[in-house]
Length: 223
Ligand SMILES: NC(=O)c1ccc[n+]([C@@H]2O[C@H](COP(=O)([O-])OP(=O)(O)OC[C@H]3O[C@@H](n4cnc5c(N)ncnc54)[C@H](OP(=O)(O)O)[C@@H]3O)[C@@H](O)[C@H]2O)c1
Image 1 (cartoon, rainbow, N blue to C red):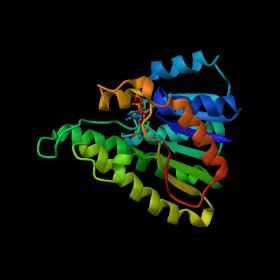
Image 2: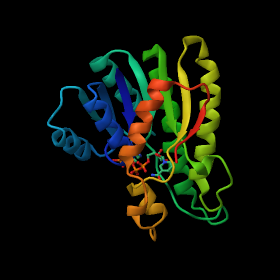
Image 3: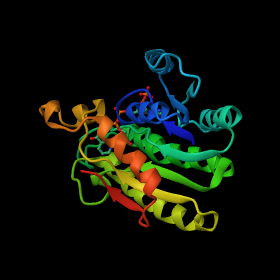
Image 4: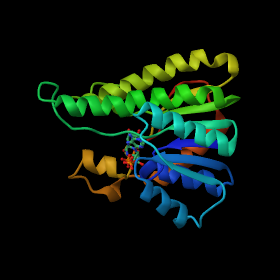
């Protein structure tokens, strides 16, 4: 399969890139930090089936160039995983800084829109799009501010996209990975003992199963 994964430099994205690469699929991934991507490529023994490119998904041109780069190197996509996201701040709406709000919405909403919009013409009929959501996008999560609102947006975006792409038999999912041992989780819960959390590799295993099983529902949780 040809797989595009945003935010592959660490956490769930990185574990998922590794999982698909090890199964012999072609993977194209990005993050803003090019060094971290090069490190991943070298760590994996410079595999020929991994393509990396620095990209900020919240920048239109950068997102467009990344998608074109993936299509040029792999051809049409079987799977798109919109994983890249930022947390912002844990703060009340009253005190939430405007610039942080705008940054979170830019990355978590605009970024998913840009990558998806530019990728749709390159998606194979019968393909899959998975958008990383969160429990904070399904029920009230006070003090999660822009992040929670962005993930509610991802749930809605996935529902409408699933309808729009039905005629091409492209499945769309809003996928909540649940509490996972990553940098983002540590930022959100600094007091928590990370060893009590599932590792990102477990999420990657679940994502492979999701791609193979293609269930008939849009919003999926993994705990
Ligand atoms: N971990 C959890 O417990 C948990 C729970 C629920 C949902 N999620 C969701 O799961 C997904 C992965 O989370 P994670 O915990 O693995 O996060 P993470 O460790 O912070 O990794 C986020 C990845 O996204 C990339 N990224 C961030 N902003 C970007 C941008 N503008 N353009 C391109 N890449 C960007 C980061 O690389 P750079 O910084 O180098 O760009 C990094 O590779 C997110 O959508 C998150 O909301 C996670």
